[in-house]
Picture 1 (cartoon, rainbow over the protein chains, first blue to last red):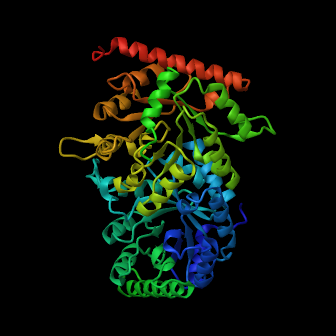
Picture 2 (picture 1 turned 90 degrees about the vertical axis):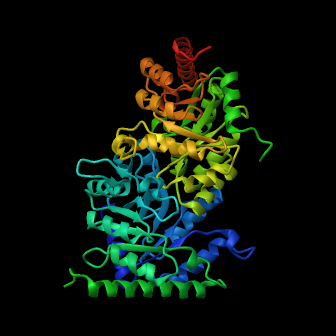
Picture 3 (picture 1 turned 120 degrees about the vertical axis):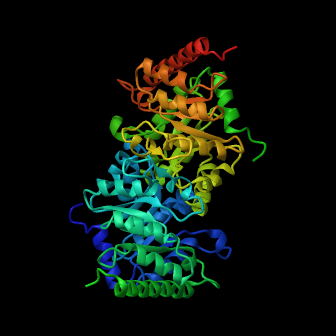
Length: 280
Length: 280
């Protein structure tokens, strides 16, 4: 496993080659496609139409598991079919105790061949460790998510010596501690720029996976500005539905939406560079 | 789905018929079996040897996922082959945002046909809801787990109006709120009797899934006493490795260990009944 380029290297190479911080989430929902659509062929078409515009693809395991064992085979084939120059992050949100976690890590990294994965922090660092043992892969820990109920636990203030801080910042601090091999990232919803800024201050070196990008450029820009690292990178911004299911449908429309988002991200980074005090 | 008996009803019927609160966890690790073992045939043998001693079976998805798509097919077959009178709890520890959670729920309940599932609370109640929508199934929320690092987040005190309480009790309180259909349970490690007692005080009506039972009867008794509900039930005590991989191996040894644990649990409940002030 030592000869393999790390996820971080592969992400940075793809981001540079395609001048893109955009990740396309692969969440195939048959009910959103014309009846009779060959879902796997359609996904291949989306990938073909967008692979020069992205830094990552993020298939979500849920949509494949719901198809049964055939879905798992389709997921394996999908991952194998993604061009070598684009890394694959499997959105699986796993989280189990040690021995089971070892088997989940094996499933994600060895069987499915993903370059990165998402995991839950609730069970503690010993349950994340089996994923981190795959040094060249990357493990993104859920930190501050973008769903409606995200704050129900994540925003709760923890009693502390030096004043209270919310649970999601405690998770961010732990993730820094778990990052002894440089392969820990965080999931930080793109809809909460203030939270993203606080997490970035605490975690200057971690990669952020940022789902939840809506259609509005203003939101996107605020989130990007808040989350960029000191080198003007360190983020992977995910869009799923807007790219997969554009109005009218079709691979060309998916490409157009991916291009629009890629360019909007590029513009946001450019503006952040110009206004950032730390820019050279 | 309305005609189907609920998980809770099926669990109570099995617990009564077999006079057992024991659940056997099905975590097939080929490295712990003689080389060349047919893992699925061996699992069927364990089930055949123990199905009159348990109230539930709990396959863990990780061990099947690590076998690829063939493992998912094996899991489906395994669940189908479990005797009808014993309910099946799939230990999957899922947790994703709404739309993805719907697909995970579909995978677990509709495709695999499990009667119950484990989920993570970190993303909030809106992400648990798609599982709860399957009214007759049961959803066990991770609360206080039994692994070494469990306390890293779960034991952290939340700042509150009426004094601080640990995160795991906040999760327990939320689970009560989410329990509008009577189909929410909690995962409560059997190694922490004090925590189990605190959770039971807060959640008198919820089913507890209790993994982490070691070999010592004293531990088992303390955990059972702490966690029993007012009716002397409401717990599902899981043992995996001690039943699956008894010294010497073989289905008869698995049966002997299951019987030992079933009887130890029965004894612990009996003693708790005699000492409990609320017993009639």
